[in-house]
Image (cartoon, rainbow, N blue to C red; front, side, top):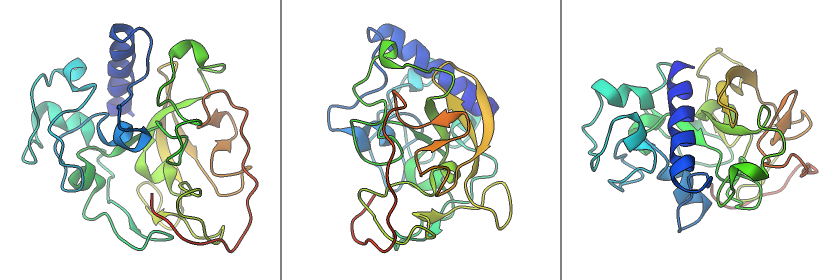
Length: 218
């Protein structure tokens, strides 16, 4: 929670310097969450991260960057992810793969630019205290339905970071800067909305869930 608070502040400072624009990569929402923050990862190899300078890392990053200020990018409970609808793992940690344990909400808990913060400015957020900025990767486990459809009871990846045997728990930073502990489920009412929170920048999109779909990658 403390790490996410610092990263939320860093994101806000970034936006102030970018005329209110949320961190946005020209390559689209996937590169926006990859390049948001952290060290160099085994899966995403870029040496530049958008908000790093605002937590004191004003240089290119390396895979061996793990200590000191780089601990702000690592959730102590990060155990990565095991295969679900996506048939690959991210072990031993997401920090190892991405360089950061937290998923920036660039695509609305999917890879869709229209739903998340990619390309948006802060004035477009209708409910800052409810719109997710970033969260533990484990909180996103029911997401990526557009690119990896499948049975509603199967998560994108199995990530039991905070409660053994219980999916979807995680710390969540919101666009107003506060952090809270929530559980995302696959039907509350869907993988993008819950009680007091939403991944959708204006809160309007609701996805109708249908079982038994298949195919794609997030």
